[in-house]
Picture (cartoon, rainbow, N blue to C red):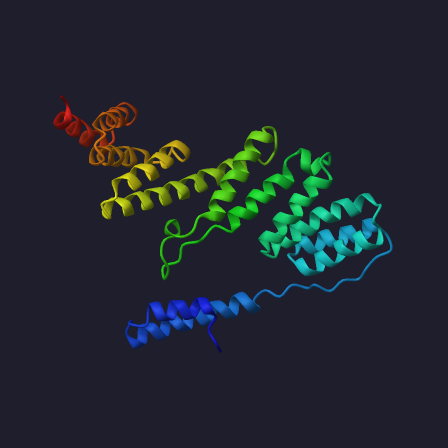
Length: 280
């Protein structure tokens, strides 16, 4: 069996491992690949009915059983055969749900966006469902953590930023939506991921002796992604970076703010010491 390009990359990265452990790693990768490609076969067979509602109900049943292809066939059939039925409109939404279930997240996002565009007064738009599902699809595309690869916060965060914007917009636009709690829980995790990424970038610039880069990344962390346990460390490092770029007044201001907002933090103690050495 040939390894996929991703697994080839992992193989090259770990080619220096001893022979036995490396063999175990590759066996695990092959087993994972086989499970991902062939596991859990769903029954996607369809038998079309006479009415739009009957076909819709069968499509819904396929969704419940995670038979995404079969579900999509029923909903596509409804759109083609019963274009003026109320179930044709619902079928558009459920086609996007089927794409989501099949992990075709970009196609699902397009489907939900089109549903919102062409059916702005539909109940599933008014209650925020379609908008929430767009945010959820972006969330599902977030880079994950796997022990063989770099931490997720070191990777490209385009999908993370998209998820943040979508869910933040959803929360503000649909304050009474039944999906508010789910969206807020997702947003907390996304905010922490983005804060981690900004801190990672800030420390990279700091280690490279590029303090202005550190300032810019930490300002973005504190302005856009505050509210995590990284706030105090970020404020302390920001003060140090300000000192390096010859902006002592801003350093003292951010250290004073740190002491005020996080008095029990270990970084507050360090900030007090730094203030004592820079006062006057």
